[in-house]
Amino acid sequence: MAAATADVGNAVNDCFSIGSTVICTTCFKEEVEGEVLAFDHNTKMLILQCHSKTSGELSDVYVMNLSLCSNVQVIKECNGNFIDDPQKLNLDQVKMRLRKTVERRQDYLKSKNADVTPEAQELYRAIAKQLGYNEVSWQGANIQILNEVTVSPPYRVDNVVSSSDNDKSCTYIKRIINQFFTTRPSAAQENAHGASSSSASVSPTSSSLSSSNAASGSPVPAN
Image 1: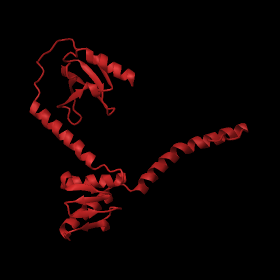
Image 2 (image 1 turned 45 degrees about the vertical axis):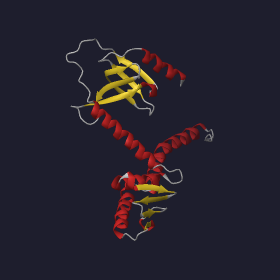
Image 3 (image 1 turned 90 degrees about the horizontal axis):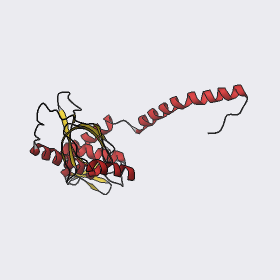
Image 4 (image 1 turned 180 degrees about the vertical axis):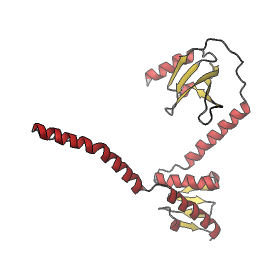
């Protein structure tokens, strides 16, 4: 970790040339590679233009805080020949995207609950996406919706109760829950898939060990 911090410190002490290609590793272990559009030494903010993940005709712009990056490398220096000046950033659009990103992170944190299963947290997010995160909250292990509908463990349609006998709201919540469990792979299917994959990878090795040791007359070693 100390070595990684030192590498970042050395990179920040240098000025990044506009047009150079840089690769950064974020605190989420995500690698971002792109062309330098701007760099502010005082704030350690680096702006990169990267190939779009959704369209070959567009580019994604990343604003990287190098203080939060574990590794920064310049993989290609710019030769200084520019055909056009770098395009100016739309700061209002950047601020809007930053605000939306922060809101999504905050919404995701609202769904976290150490007292319930990951499946229950996933259901919470499915309901919140339909009704809005401001309308859903945790009340202990129960999911509280619209301040009147409660979904208690094990979070099936039979566990939906309305404090005001609002059948319309209950019916809508039950529809969301039913769709969630219908489209989501069951635990049995996930375990069966994992077991079949494990058996496929282990069985040939076990057979080859048994055949090899049988031929040599030596016992099969214990795992």
